[in-house]
Image: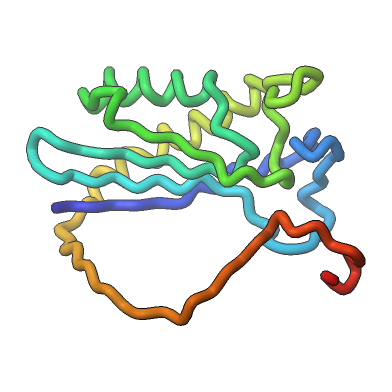
Length: 158
């Protein structure tokens, strides 16, 4: 099996309405990770089987952008669209792209993201290398996480 991956910054350069209904200014520090990326993994499992996976720091992966990318892959790399997977990290610190009814799709921003990805793809293809996949099993202590627990005091997590 062969594999290649890349990370592309998709952080808008100007203030932009976020999916969290506020504006993000890339010149002002925010809490947590400051990055906004799309990560791409390309697996060549055999001569007849490939898989491309996109993970974007967006609330969701918009249909407009995914359709443009699918068309590009079919036309440029002869890769069936069924072998291309898109996912968003569901962050609210990225541009809102029409997920909510009152949000704009910002197709101009999606076109910029498409061009950044398109420019990076030839290098991604050239850097595909042979890899080995291994599996192991380990024992872990029993743990339980319930993120949906209603907190009595949100400040202290009680």
